[in-house]
Image (tube, rainbow, N blue to C red; front, top):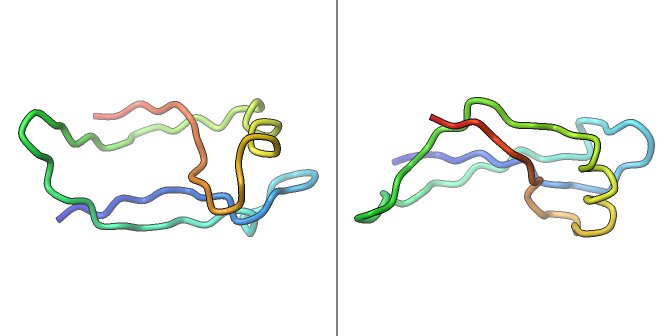
Length: 71
């Protein structure tokens, strides 16, 4: 059993983002099927473009996007 964690947008932020603007959600993932792989995120990018993107393309409760390095 693998528990996944994802940052979600709790509310659209004004000014400097605060921890209360986000929520760390956990969910149990099923076992990978034949031909699938399971990766662990090591680094996650947090970039300036995420501010205007989150305000125009995301609704509250959506998972935050970003590039990552995984193993």
